[in-house]
Length: 115
Image (tube, rainbow, N blue to C red; front, side):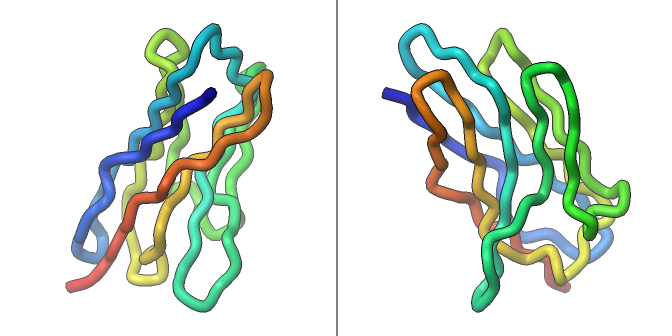
């Protein structure tokens, strides 16, 4: 069984930065891809950033160079560095981990951008 836990959310002022972490645990875990998604109230869940096993990256159009996804393979952890945050970035951010036994979502972490 795979467990996925996000952390690092919180309240930040416009223009500020946050770093989210996503840790995956499980026996003999083989991870094929990490993805960060977000869902704002009344909106559909959308892709923020994704990194696959070969290092290929994908970002949502709204990111515009402000966010960076990375991973530490030894720690089974992925990160989302978010800079120049805007009020429109306010949402619950979810981590999705694609493994050899299927995909698993974390519980989400709230990011609020407000002055």
